[in-house]
Length: 248
Image 1 (cartoon, one colour):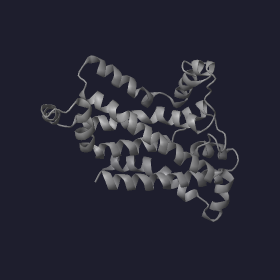
Image 2 (cartoon, helix red, strand yellow):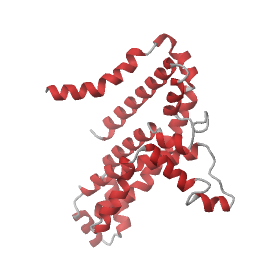
Image 3 (cartoon, rainbow, N blue to C red):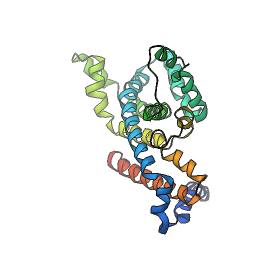
Image 4 (cartoon, rainbow, N blue to C red):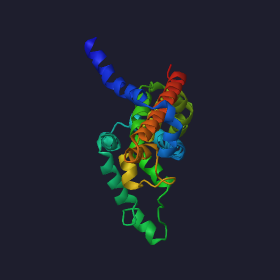
């Protein structure tokens, strides 16, 4: 029990320190100093779009990984999980080399007169890059646990693999999809390194809540503490709500 108590303390004490050190009397003024409303609103918008992209793109990928049996599936799974262990700043550099004006994709787009602007679109790209693996792994685990006899029964009834995925697999793993979406949203909300490297930190355009906290540290520690505490409360509230509703 003692190691468990130490583990809980390692996780909980730093979070409690935010609330203990928070100056409640000056909270509204501190939040205005940190530009909290603008940064939080941008974070909520971009993380919502990111989560929708993860669900739309990651669910078919999770199904493919859960049902694939070739050796290439292991390689694909390894590639998908690389952003989990890649330093966020390295991920941001990789995104620049992909989507920048001289990047693998950005270069041809720039030659056609298409330039990726420094706005919320870059934030969504960075958040999706780091969040998608969390979603895919969570949903793949749920889909891999499905009895394959469901696939066989659907096939004998004339259902195509795409229809089996849409009408059988997805409804059965909705709790896993909700769990993966929650993890992806939480990861996107806390994303910092890839975002600041790839999208920059422009207030009202690319400065999400974590970037605003970092900038506020140079101006007023109380403002940074206030915004960090708000993020903590939002994360705990949303995670508690979603996990209680979908995973009970």
